[in-house]
Image (cartoon, rainbow, N blue to C red):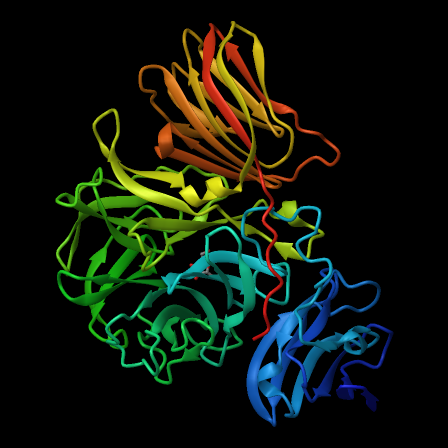
Length: 576
Ligand code: FRU
């Protein structure tokens, strides 16, 4: 069967040709070609997560541009509309070759061109939208990528599936902020191409134009990513690519000589680049295979040679590599090598080899926190990290978006009360700007088996608690249906059963709790240990406070402060 359909809409020329793969039934998968001549920035595609997976190839004037899979709506109200950027092809003949589409699918008649991204009127108002954690307008996100500060602007990029609530079609989404709190999401920065989809990586400011990419007065921003091509779709293995911006992060160009590092081994990926001033070279940390990583060196960001290896980190993927002054002492700088699940080594680096001085350590435990990365070129030298609050998948079911990032947090190396140098993690100071009304409780004794309520009204809060464990065996803290427990004898803290070893100093437990609509981050002992968790709030429950129970003896709340947090309304993105 072959049918050809053409129709005209104002601003939207569409021609549709369909080739059915089967003669029988209403739902036979067919291939169609939908032609548009864009005169706007975006084409909104209707997505229904229960619809069959279709395969879309985009050709412009007959030339291949990109391919992706998505679940185009067959019938009924779409779950959401995804944005296909078409503004770059204005006035040209753009063909969407859609394979495996249900014959009776309504999707093609629901395609709409627009200068704004989809869902403009409802976005950020969804029931489970994080209120002060970054999440994408629509689609799946995972790892933070390319984190860099330039000219007063924080740039974050993220692993994004623009066309689905599930992982896939990896593209670098992009958002910016001037305060690390309010984010504006922009159109995608780096799109897949024939070398593969765009996996994780990093970014730097090339202050001395060592790459030679500089055009005007802006320093080049240079980004490194992995081309993933292990699928039938692209038929080759993961390589490393480069893209750059010569206008301060507004537009992005892929390097014409990509890939810059060929496939070496296994699933080699996730390049993280840093400038090493002592050896006057750029250093690239790369995940290689199993639990092994490698370091590469370059003077121009384009040509890289392998310097050394780092083996048996105890985890895989997403390296980070950076120096930190121990206890702020500029004469005692150590290097930290970090992997995907937060295992890290402390050691020294001579420009060639990283020599670990510790076994793999961690200060973050389980929970929903993975693939963290630190910003490059922070203006005040802070080592600021963002992480993906992974999993907790069910939480965002029914929402047009999936997943969120942790709050930005500062990493420092400090000596613990037990005398070991360890990584500490604390929320950035900026977060305090979102603090509103304060409730405070001071010097309250909690008798054995008694519960004291630290009152607060609202679902979003930032709390600082100083509790003297006294003669208690256990402290059980309940808030927003989450349970934090401290076990005095066994020296551990747990959030909803996720345990982390923790020793107290003179019986004082210090906690910072950051609670958003769908997440809680616990920082214990000024960031010596942290646990993050994503949860789905129970509808209709009004939260009234933090309940602290003492078991096996009496304890005391020395001081507790709870601030109501303001919701951060993400801005509607610009289309320029
Ligand atoms: C970590 C990771 C990376 C990879 C990316 C793909 O979550 O698996 O190793 O680059 O996600 O989305």
